Structures are given as C-alpha cells and as structure tokens.
Length: 513
Image (tube, rainbow, N blue to C red; front, side, top):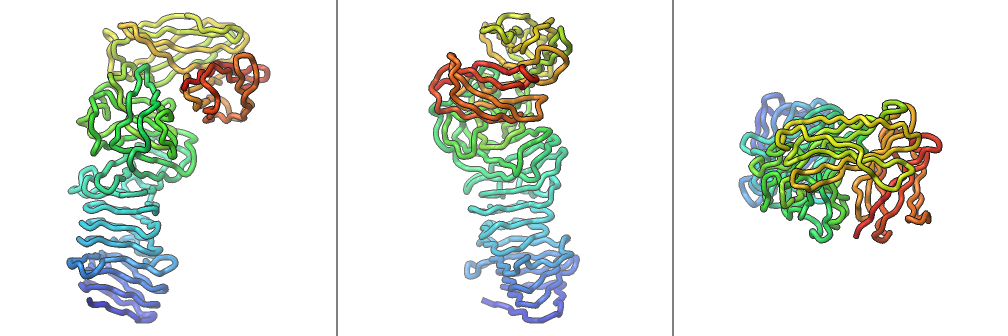
C-alpha cells in the first residue's frame, strides 16, 4: 500500500492532475485543486489538523482493490476545505465502500459508489449532492444539506426516483418559506422510499428531517375514518418520519410518498395517515387535520402513480399508508361557519371529489339546546352525484340567536350512507371570524382543538355529563389533548370566553375504546 506524507509548511501544492493510492495531508500543508483539474485517489484521504484543501476542481475517491479502504478522515476542527472551495466537488466512487469521519463541510458531493458510504458523525453539505449509485448509511447520525434551494438534492439520470441510490437513515434539509419540491430520498437497507415535500408557502420551520423504517406495532384498534369511509389497515411496507425544528405558523404543504416495496394496494383505496413518532398503537393513526386527498384517479390515488399524495398538511410526525375496503366517496376540502351580522350566519364548504353523493343536510344546535336539528338541505352539484372537479357550496342561515350556535353538515349518499363533518361554532352577535373545531370526535381519548380567529390561550375544562370537573387545561389556538385515562363515555368540553367575555364554547366529546 502506498502512502504519501505531505509535510510542506506554508507552501501551496498545486495539483493540476494526479492519480495515487492514499493521500495523507500533514499539519500545515495546503493543497489547491485548480478549476478544471482532477485528483484521483485509489484509496482514502487523511487530513491532519491545520491542513487545508482549496478545491475548485474534482476530487475522486476510488478503490479497485479490497486491500485498501477508501475512507475520508478529517481531523481539522472546522473541516479541511478552505474558503473559496464552493465550486469543488468530491466524488465517492469506491466499489468497496467509504467511511466518512470528521468535521468536513463538503461543498458538493456525488455518490457513485457501489459499496456505498457510511457516516461516523453528522456530515454537512453546503451546495448540493447528487445520488447516482449506492446507499449513504447514516446510522444514528444525519446528512445535513444547508443549502435551502429545492434542487440541492438530486438524482442522477441513471437513478430514477432514487431507486439505485438513497439515504439509509436520517436526511436533514433547510427549506425556503415559499414554493418548491424538496426531495428526501430515504429508505432502508434494501429499498428506497422517496418522500417529496411540496412546499406551499410554509412559514415557521427552517429545516426538516426525514427517515424511513419498518412499521411499529400492528393494526389492532385502528378506528380512523375519512369522509365516512373507514381505514381497515395500515400497509406493512413501512413508515416515514418527517419532523421540523418548529411548528407551522402559516401556509401548508403536500406530501408524495413513494411506494417501492408496498403490496396489496388498490386504486383510490389508500391514503396517507399520521400518528406520533414514538407511537406503535394503531388507535393513534389519524387523518392529518384539515388535509385532503386528490380527486378520484387524481395524482397519488392510483397504484400506477408509484406514490401516495395528500395535500393541505400543516403537521409533522410518523406517516403510514392507510388502506380502505372501498373508494373514499366525498373529499371535503374545508367547512367554514362565519357570522356575517347580527341576523345571519354564512356556511361555506368545498369538495374535491364526489362519488354517489345525494347532497348535504345542514344541522344546527343553539347553546341552550341539547341536540342538533335539521336546518336545511343542499343537493349535490355533481352530475348524478359524481364529480372529480372542485365544487363550492354556500348556505345562509337566518340566525339572530344571541348565544353561541353550533353547525355540522351531514353528507348523504344516494344509497343512504352518510357521514358528518367536524362541528363549527360561531358567536351570537356582531361580526366575528372565530370558530372552534374538535377533531376527531368520537375519538379514543386523543383529539385536537382548532380555534380560528383566536390569538391567545384560553382556560378550558372537561366534565362528565353531571357537571363534575375531570380535567382543567389551558388551550392554545391549536392544541392536542390527551385524556386516554378516561373511560369510554360522553363528556363535555368547555372553552371559556373564546367568543368574548361570557361566551363559551361547549360541546360533547365522545370517547370510545
């Protein structure tokens, strides 16, 4: 094995072109790779503290024999690359694999290594990485892309959808607060399962971290429904984890999860679900709040698309592919209830998909009433109850009640099946855009409170039907609530003064086991 020791102090070694086995860069040595030049190492690189590389060309790490390991070791506290190396690129190309150790901050990297590469610590890339061949194994560490441009991670033309080269572990990417598609080519030891984050002006998070792994637990206790259709299982092909450094404060995003290795899927009978990262309990799977699927046969609804798609997402967590026994009938995009004036409440909602839909029954409950009652009906705008385009609905309720009014919509199929929307509540007088939603309800002791038009926290409490206080809490405008310790029963949630002083939100919470 040949090893070159460079011990030149305060002298730059200009390398226009070079091919050798292992390069050892001693303390004080400086190497410059000029623009258009290439250095090929049939082995590894070892940089001592105090050495530097100014790279404006290409540095190849190859290894055509099993005798050497083509490893990268950098003992510099701030990394070996000198300022001004932004145009340089390092090619990892060994058939026998690479191990990357130290504090190197790479400008650009090409992974074209049949033997892959393994990180011994977090590794950062400031410009871009191209995946061509081989896995990048992170273990407990992370590959960090600090360039927030959406194209900072790319697949080579020979690596369609990252099927031949991906991250087996944790990939962290900085993002911009605008639009753009961010690839997270993650997977496990045997397969790639690309996650694509389609940004729609998300505000709040500066970076996201993604990974992929086996599905924890089984499907016992799964109860999640979407638009009245139950999910019967979550595919065993695996789960993704997508997390952010902070919560979303504005905008939303869509996800495309690639289904390599997933079996048993049927067109229009699968969708992305979420639950907490640490959960292995099937009862924790939910539809991401206020999110939506594309229309029937739309993008991410057919097996032939190769991915599942969901849009209008604002949360991060563990993600799985839920499967239904029938096509999801009506995709409801939104539902709003707003008091326009002292005598009128305006209800609006939209659908992306309708199948066999008869129409929508509007139900209302006043604060001094115990039950919802029929208030009106709108026939479906879809031809014969079927539509794959956006349809908007509007209903005006002549309502001068001075207390709080509650609304829900009952969507009914032509065959008599029906499902309910979430409940919306509006203030009793004056103009207001405040509304409160509890989702899901019924639930297994975990639900989310959404208060739109509210900027401050409010006191809340949960009582039994006799009025005994069981739990007190302070709720934020978006608040996860966990009362799994309560037995299955009907309870009352009260949020104090949410519609103004003396105007409380009060609604039944149904817990099932």
